[in-house]
Amino acid sequence: MSTTPTPQPSPPAKSRKTMYAVLGVVIIIIVVVAGLYAGGYFPGTGMTATASAKAYDTGSCTSASNCDFTPATLSVSTNTKVTWTSNSTTVHTVTACSTTNSPTSAECPTMNASGLSSFDSGASGFGSGQSFSYTFTTAGTYYYYCRFHNWMHAQVNVS
Image 1 (cartoon, rainbow, N blue to C red):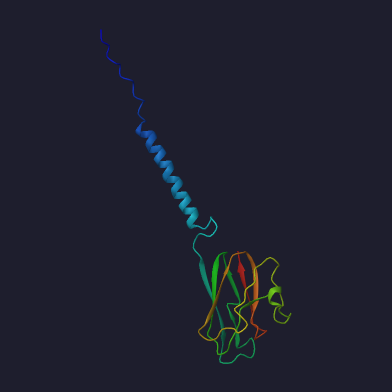
Image 2 (cartoon, rainbow, N blue to C red; image 1 turned 45 degrees about the vertical axis):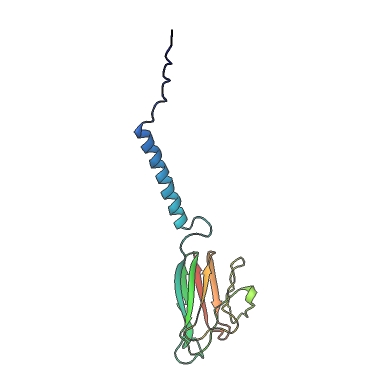
């Protein structure tokens, strides 16, 4: 007598509803991670915002009435790249009021808090049509000045 093998029952098929639910969860996770990445929640990612300021004069640079930074106070968020452009007839610097740069009290009536990074456009400065950029990565109030014109002061508020 010959016996025929009995077919093994196949595992139950997953319902379409379950597969759609799993697929939906995977898509949601991908969208959330992509949004966090684009928003800069992972170090070294995200878009850098930009802002601008100017060093200017009115034909001569002898006092704050004809030579200064504008705006005097600039408010930006962290990871913003600020670019200062000169439309001045003379050379200027953008120099942080930090102990690294050793300013006098006339140059910097208010010093930056310790822990804030320092920046400096360089001892030779930059002239008309030239620019200097710095990206602010830490929140705080950054005071800065021009090495050549000690009445030129301004600040960047980073939040």
